[in-house]
Each structure stands twice: as C-alpha cells, then as structure tokens.
Image 1 (cartoon, rainbow, N blue to C red):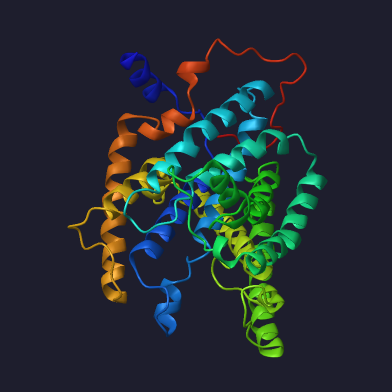
Image 2: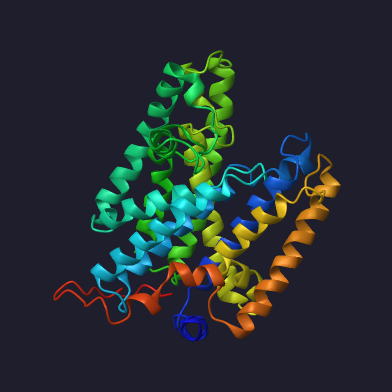
Length: 377
C-alpha cells in the first residue's frame, strides 16, 4: 500500500493546471498567515496595508475552492458520480481534521470544517444552472447576514465567533458550522457559489480576466465607500442585534457590505493572479507551488503556531513583516523542493484518493460532461 501511495503522489498530477488559481491560493495562504502572526489594528497607511488581508484572505480561499470544485465537476476525467464521491470524501476527511486541529493552542479559527460542509453542499450545487448559482449566492449575500444578526441579537452568547472543536456536542458543532461560528454556512456559501459560477467561465481568456479585474475592483471600492458613508449617516451600532450593523464592513463581521466587498476583492485578486501567472509563469512558480500544497502548508502553519517556545506572534508591525517573510520563505522552499519530486502534497493526496477510487467507480452513461473551452486543472 505504501508503494501505491508514493506512486500516486508522483504520477497523480493533472496534465493541465490553471496557474493563476494556484497563485491565488498561495496568496490567500500568506494573507491568512499575516493575520495570524501580526497586528491588524495599527493606524496609518502601513498598518492598513498590512491588515488588508484581514477578512479577505479567507474569502479568497473559499472563492478559489469554489472554482476548483466547478472544474472538478466539469472535468473530462471524472463522471458526475466520481466527482460527487471525491467531494464526499473531502468532507469526510476535513470535518474531523478541522475539529481536531481546533483543539491545538494556536489561537486560530480553523476553516477546514467549514470547507467540509461547503463540499457537501457542492454535491448538489454543481447541478444548478448558472442563473440559479448566482441567485442563491445573491440570496445568501442578502439574507445570510440578516439571519446571523438576528440570531446574535436573540442569543449573543451563542454567536461568539468561536470555532467548534471535536469535544463539543454534535448540536453545538452543527450550530456553529451553519449559523454562529466564524465561517457560518448561511454567509460563506455566497463566495463559494460565486467561485462555482466563475469556474464555468473561460478563465484563460484575456476578456474574462479583464472583467474580473474591473468588476471585482469597482465593486470592492463601492462596498467600502458605501459602508463608510452609511456609518456616518446612521451612527454606530450599540447592541449585538442592532440593525445598523448591516451597514458596517468590519472584517469577519458577517455583514453584507463586508461580504460583498471582500468577495469582490477576492474576484479582483483572482483576476490579477490569472493574468500575472499567465504572463510570468516561471517567476511566479514558487508561489504556485505553495498554492498547490495549500492544505499541507495551512496545517503545518497551525502546528508551528501552537509551539509554546516559539515567539510567532507580535504586536510590532516590523516584527510581523519579518515573521511573515520567514514563514513565507520557509514554506516556499519546502513546497518547491517537494514539487520537484512529487506532483501532489502529502495531504493533497488524501483529498484526491485516485489510488482508492480508480476502477471502483464507473461513469454513469450520459452524465460524462466535458469542460468545453474552460482550461482544466
């Protein structure tokens, strides 16, 4: 079995990847690391620039995950049944993994258990036509924050943005994942569905990339300007259930203008990543390698953060930049060295268990769907 696994790691890479997706995934990972090790409340231009990934990097992660799921579903190499089996397997793997990792003393709200729920939803969502994907995403953007705010107003103690752990009762875990946690499904389904919709577009097209840049950038600026204007007009919210929270855009507030602006910013970064990686594939290869090993790198950084002797958090902006650079360089070197020998990361192999499913699942007649002109991973 060990030989089969090693062989699968070496031969298992798809022939074609969208380099920009790997680059965007790598950027999202570094953005999350920056938020986890350094301050996000330093005044001034430098402080705001450092804190820019706060509340946005995780949205980019989820958006890119949606794109990847869409490409998996539309791949010529997988039938609908095989794609559903792979998504189910990822959910089964990531749910307990995320809950266990939350037990570590790293001080981070782990996102993997929320990924598990999104992958389960994706089994049905990939069957929706384009217009319904956008309708459901729009509904989640409008109604998800309202549901979160009303719930927080009714039960402030249950909406503390603390992730569930493996030792919590099942009901509390479900409540946190769906309604009250740091990544509640009712809110975070929106960027995931937008990613599913984007995965059906021709992302290799210069026109598509230009639209991502323009629409994403303009929408992000409009959301930011609207939030600041509305706060001035309406005043500051005073209670957990105050409806004026709907006009705010604080990072991870779960409010609509934050969700809209953060998702739009993720679309913009995706457009930049696609264009830059397409033009300079060799120069961006190290960051692409990190993106290809994003799950392994994410788990590794959680493990490192919980080492008690390591001073890996700071309130100094300069020290934080140094820590992020050290983290980034170390992860990049490891990713590049690994990818020189293997096609998949050690944890990424578990997400795509071809060595388990090959030959066991047959394509359902009439359900094999080509990806058309979409570039394939």
